[in-house]
Length: 412
Ligand SMILES: [Fe+2]
Image 1 (tube, rainbow, N blue to C red):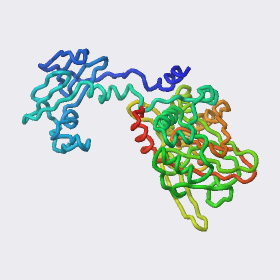
Image 2 (image 1 turned 45 degrees about the vertical axis):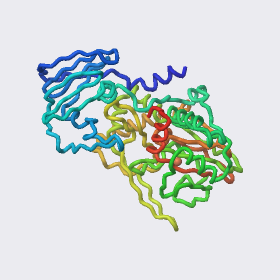
Image 3 (image 1 turned 60 degrees about the vertical axis):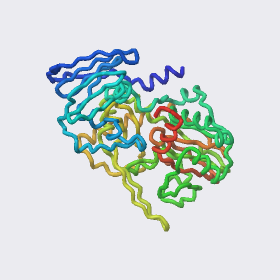
Image 4 (image 1 turned 90 degrees about the vertical axis):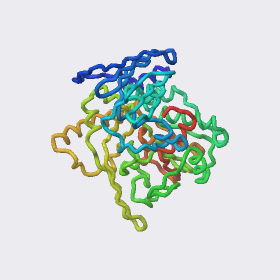
């Protein structure tokens, strides 16, 4: 069940590369070498405009200037800092190697002037565009309520989580796959919530501060500070870089209602992509403004952000960010009227997917249960409530969380 779902989730990005009718007349130059490295045959062709390497299953093409720019010799690349030393602007854009060969599993190029570059074939195979295009940046399990509940994703336990790296790694793996993850048994205080958040990564400072804590007192100019229901949305869509992770902890609730709503935005978007690819494409193309205007006695803010509702990596079409907040969406003036009409239709189709009851995961956040939400993927909302309800939480920066995950050798 798990592996089937995972394959389905990433299937769109695993299409074979389509090399459409290039008109280049490749004149194969003198050199053609076959070598055995790592039990795989390698074939090298020097073409007019690039070097073609077949190694394993995939033919790869490297521009000559790219190869010189990516030289990993010590004079070109500092192994201590993992930074380029070479001045790219100093490379002749028409540079070509004087000689090339495959030797001991390496591509060896000698450039005019005598500089030698060596690339392991495995490194080239890992870093070529052809491999990047076929791979996924982040494997995910897309879910509706039924898929998520049947997956029986483990919840971390506070004391183990705070002291055991294996538990943190397991938590991060769940978080990366599903876009939500829970820690149970956390003391119902702002301080403990801050500690459990910092165990994951750095807390992002925003206009709300680092750690925030609020009740329905309307102390800030935002609907979140009321008892009203909130429809599904992503937060801080008015930042050019929306906050990556949101942390919630309900410290106290003396009343009824207030369940948290979670919807996997990528599941809805992928359904839209299958059913209505033109609508999906349009939502990736039209930049939409969002803004936060606040004027209270002690807070004055006017923040604006701009970006499409759906964001995909251009090399493999993989979704990486949904920006969906009907409360904060500002004036649409970034497309002509005929495009705007089609955008509303596409937005309506996406909204219909996001609002399907089977896609809604409802969770009651009780004191002690802390939830981490991928704010670039999973939408949240809440039902209305009565009584005193105190919530605290914070935002984490996505880059830092992903860096933490890579430190545990997780695939991101
Ligand atoms: Fe929110």
